Amino acid sequence: MSEIASGDLGPWLSPDDLAMVRRKVPILYIDALPVRVDSHGDLEEVGLLLRATAAGTISRALVSGRVLFHETIREALARHLEKDLGPMALPRLPVSPVPYAVGEYFPTPGSPFYDPRQHAVSLAYVVPVVGDCRPSHDTLELTWLTPAEALTPEVIGDLSEGHASLLRQALAHLGRLR
Image (cartoon, rainbow, N blue to C red; front, side, top):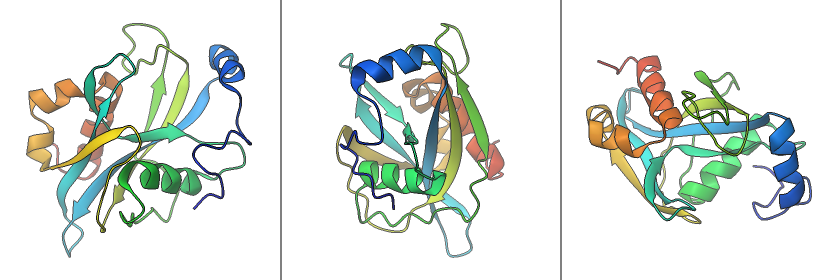
């Protein structure tokens, strides 16, 4: 895991500097879909976070966050998974840092991957989790759903367009999209 504490701004930028950089430079993120698999490695459930947004609404999301300066992709995945799922989640990080998808977020309304704050590039991963998940920070709960339940209009409608697309791509990548 990264030596960088989630609240440490040391290798990162002040909020004002970050806002300026977001207006001018794409930012690198990771997105992770926690999954439960059976003893053969077959997908049983996907985990979606329930979060309160800054606007006061409730939405579902994948584990997501920035990659910090001097932080590897694996370290960023470990840090964000622990922050959102708790220290006993025991994620099985991928051996290879090759993502199943790349999300390109733009601050342009109507973009398939829309983020009003910035232009961002996100590397997306499926990460099996074998431990006890106890969401923390801004995560209200983690809901485990079968692939069919995750694809219902109600669940897809609770995700941002970008995360809905990444969920569909993950299930297709795992051979579970109908």
